[in-house]
Length: 484
Image (tube, rainbow, N blue to C red; front, top):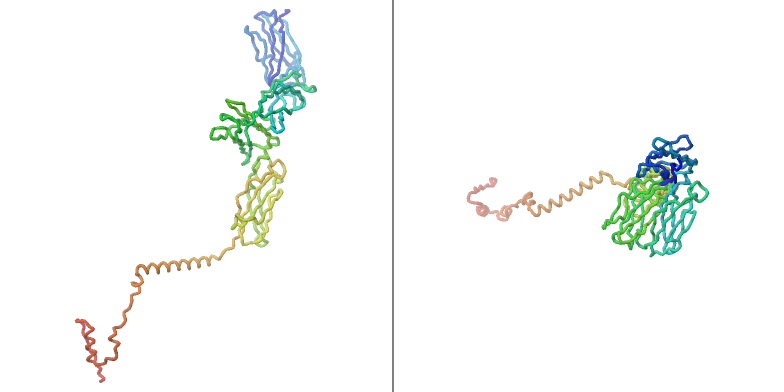
């Protein structure tokens, strides 16, 4: 049986929870030899067989793949035995400390922020992911920039030979700092991160949260970025969450991404991480990144349910409201409020009352004029807690008070008088133009002069005059004075 046992048995844990074990077949093993791997916490106890073998060209098992492996403080037991034509062959067994065989993942979120004036670049990162280590001080790091290597136990590094017109590459890997149960072997290198290339990174990056759950981020293309440059935004809401790319980009007239719209955003206590990198067919594009406290960029909604109740006898009004709705706090003490009151008749004029109040949800306004109508509006900002200190949106105007009014009967009389006067003027003008006044009021002719000429009392002359003034068909009747 000498030479039939496996050789070069080795296991490695990678990507946090995957493990591969491999071996070579025995040097005297025939082609019909088959091997089987078992492992467990203790020898001959709770031992399970491999479920996913790796095979060579002859179909012999030469390795095994494991998933969902967790590193604990025990030394699991590995056993590889075999058979040949129904006969047992020499077995192989070993106890292994799992943390020693782990291939550490690369450090996460390597970022570089350079300052041209100081010719320095700040480089920082997050520790590699493991299933059993939470202490960030358990690692030390190797940093390589332009063939220059540095070792540090911090999670940041200051590079002091920066030139903005030059392109640089940095990569980092991790190992045990010497006092934790961490593999002493160097882990995987991080993906190289380029920096430098002045003018290609985005500019004027800003984000704003509004309407409680919506967030817009916008930026401008780099001054010296090539025309075909396209930008991509990634963000990480907290360290425990995965980095996500924007799903709804805002584009300019050249279809270049210049912003992003996010939905269902929740505000936490940790700073969110934003990264905007770019690509071009002609050049490398410098990335831009920033950590932002989300609560600081929220545009607060106005106070809601604003009501004003006035006491007509004591001449004061009670203003009441409810706090703005936000996604991460329900305490009235977190807010302060600005109250602004003007006369309704002069909405663009100077405010007659302004008050800034810490907390609470009511305020008393003393009226100086009870015969005026007023306009009130309010806004809020953060006073404590994790609430934006910037003033939020103004509320819609709220009217209250009593305007000085003229009696309704006076208005009616004035209206009737004006209407009557207008009708009279229109009628007179119309009748003057159409002559309807002459038809309505004809002229009455006066008596003929002959009847009033008393000086001619001679009967013969009177008869002659009467006959001269009558027509042919008229009958003349003379009346004599019988009394004579």
